[in-house]
Length: 331
Ligand code: BGC
Image (cartoon, rainbow, N blue to C red; front, side, top):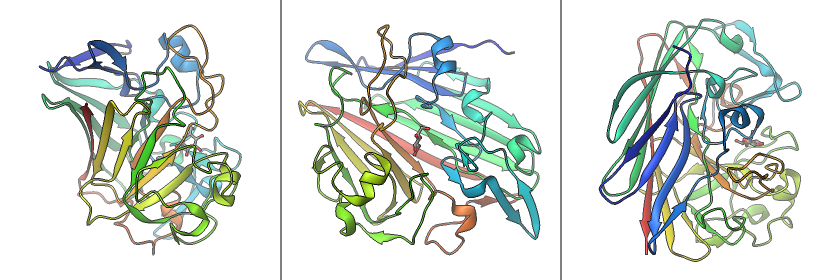
């Protein structure tokens, strides 16, 4: 069935999330803050607008999130040319990535929905038929748990994530006065195209340290690393000895979100190119309207097999399983 649908999950605390089978997309996330409904993620007004934007708002991104340099991979001596969609590189799975597909609703209840997708052998150039599920669970203690499962018929790289942009102020301001903490000792330097251009570096280099809560506007465009990308658009290698990967705090300090994940890395993207993305109020978002915290493998991992993380390649007979939890607190 190729009909776009909206599914609403609600919990006993009055929290509500909306999802769609189009791109297995997270459309909306509202909570009561001081008696008022506050929207915590960015979104558009209509499916037409979702189809026009290229910011991947709330989408499930795959088969391979982030960039693959030169849109090519080699597996067991075989070369695969992938579909390039950002210059010569591939971004977020190619021109027709998982964010643009209609997924099947496999199961649905008050507080959970599971979407399923079959990505055929050769989809966007990738080898193997990949069967994927993405499920969202809303718990009564205000967690949104996202789980991915996948299996393949041929060895293929897999990197599935969610591309929600958070604005815990309720979209009233940009996110520059939010504070962010990321438990990571290393980050990956990238060139102007977002392609890793060096090995992992200590976060103390280039002022990339987020190990203590830091206001996002703090020296945002003065560090050479962030100048290149117009803000944060970097992968952090998570310190797995710390239970929480990241913490985001609204500028009024009333909403906090903790991110925990099974993934080795987190892409921090401050919405540096969000300008002109349609918003849900008949207008357009500006740059820095939201921050995406995308748990994933390091970008371009298929070309960097020695990086300290599990393999991003899925083999036939293996099951891909990863989880991202967003825990919200109101004070
Ligand atoms: C990337 C950005 C890109 C954005 C929207 C992020 O994951 O890191 O460079 O502009 O997605 O495509």
